Length: 510
Image (cartoon, rainbow, N blue to C red; front, side):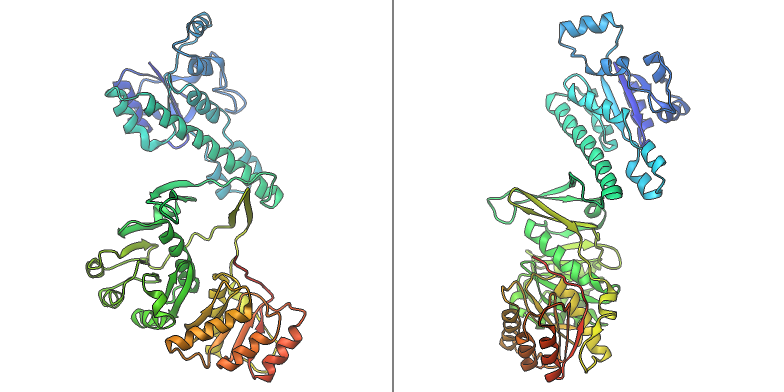
């Protein structure tokens, strides 16, 4: 039996090679892998002894050879193939272990295009595909985490069809992901990221029990190991809907740097938010905006949850709490609620991935775009368009309202007072209806929004939203501006003595 080992990531390769030798394999290797194994005292054959041809063109050509690919690809149970291999003096290669040149790492390290080009692997993917195609005769290993599993399967004769098939699927996933990464990089570099093809590749983290509904299947996939490195289940199993709600809550709660922010989300929409020096106070203030909707909701807390806060959180039924950390005492307290799920995300503060791109499935395909983010400068540099200016505390409220609005389904309006959400209307077909709905909800739960600041993620098409805001006692408004009736809107704000700012940036979320 012969094994060909040629890896860029050499972690674990020496131990794997030793294991193969113990199982009776003859080992063939290339370049750096050959040297690594040789230095470890392993009896290994250099590739050119098999190919009968030296590596050439600075290593660009070394495994692209009939003695290699013939040895991988010929069918062992095909008599004609056997005779042809014998006639051509091609010996079989029964295991191929390959991982590919570090293309992504190179692009992160340098912008030198020549160096980037040199880190596009050619022989590696070709060997992987050859071995995967002939998987019934050749074991293809592309994941260092599979080394011990492969050794065990060979030793105990468990390398059956299903085992080999699973390695084959992983191999094709490996090369497909690699080629997609290269194509996306080239399109980003030369076509602004919008080439003729767009590849979206994620790695499965886990299956969810089901999708949005029990009759749908679901799973979580990740980019760049984000969830594997950052999300930890402390208690309970995340459902499909939990994950989408966690995403909404964490994005809002983490939007304010190191501030102690608490965000409550229900069905993807924020129903509570506050920033305070004290986390318990922040949670209490967040809860006031809509305690009915908060029941069974998802709470994102941008700091460690301690015992005192845990006791407060346990006063109502919550579905999920996500925070950068939980004290042991807090976990013990929160574990008293059987249905409550706890997730750790980040370290000292909640961590978001800040993906550069965004996409949405539509029937027949998907739409793809740059990710939308609110820059801090949008509020700080917003243009005052009225006679009245906002105070420092009102400007802070405008910033909070504006960021929440950008992360809430359109049409939406957000009312914030003393760094806490006091009313919100979202997902409405009319902006004035969103304003009215928010005010009505605030009255129902007994929240006073007089003196609040209001944000809209898009411009007011008419002055009616400003008139409604004035009736509710709003003192400052921030919106993008850009309506053909901006003058009427500004005039309304001046009439009501409301400070108004235009950012010039719209943040629709559909």
